Image 1 (cartoon, rainbow, N blue to C red):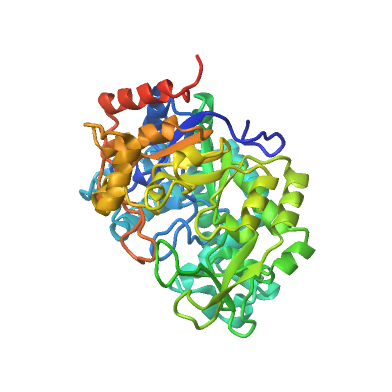
Image 2: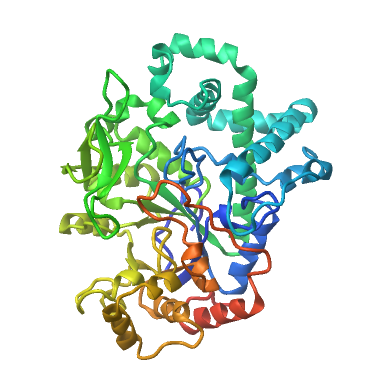
Length: 510
């Protein structure tokens, strides 16, 4: 299987991999990036027999730093650009790194990191402007041309956002908020340097990401990307394509907001605040915007996990003004028609369906009609009876098993706060506990299951507790911060993971 859009096969069989977002890499810049530590991690995957690396969405994050609430569904996060790679290409010097603060090693302190990192990127941009040779300029122009269908709007959106002190687009001057061509042309003439800077950031991100993906693919590692079903209201996508969304025509705010009803994670549900789609309009346009989104994703990942897949069958819609997700309604979506168009345009796609939460037979039928593997999470397996679909003996082969996801506690943290009843169920199911820690019991359980794909969060390989949790759903701040230290990918952990991966038939056949 390749990452290009002209040749795709179904998801691989009998493999395993690691879930880790690039922000979690070690780095002297306070946040993980696409530099040398990313390659070291890929080497660790190869050494341990893994064939997959799963990442969270890679877009430019807004308030709260959530990769699921980005300023663009198609752009890359500039904070992931490696200053060391820019140095290697002559756009920065080692002297530029002389006064870096002593960043925390185990957390991303976004407020501290962002101004320093962006200052380095501004300097690199100026150096590129002043010193790029003819070949580099041609590469930059070719990139801008190939991505123009989203890059033009995104670069202008971000340039305007800077001039508007970061306020949401729907509060801007009406002609600009309403994307009027004459007003936009005036903005382009007024902000050429700011627009160039935004395009340059995307150029460097995609250069670095493409290099890293080539490195991974050459070593047999495929990358699982993540498409959040919804996009942020304050995004270039909604600003430039308002007809695709259910918006209040007078204010530009969401008329209907996305979320989920009360569930395992929250007694009042989750009110995400994103505008839901105007599926009638999308269907009449032959789903052009969505097809373009998938095509763009396949430029830089090998497989795609669709977050909140059930929203393609029916979605929870909450009216403007509600403060929780309790008072909403399920609305049907044309999922079958969409995936048929997607298959017709792009071929059979390597899609994984996040089918957690309130799942109906109709959602399962949509998933199975297109042969998308669903998700199984071991942390959900031990609270009920033998019919629990998350117990491994109930799995189909066509699924992806996780010990936990980015929304779960780590396995150690989860187990420590289980009730005695659930701990007893875990004990009886396993038959014994490993002296190496409960995380290795669940890793063994995932790898030994019949699921074609097993994915382990790196925090579980390390045996870390709740302090290493990536996200607490419903908590607005303090998420997405965990990082590991250089040197933690030790020989002992590597050997143990490699042994289990080979034992359960998931390592590549040499």
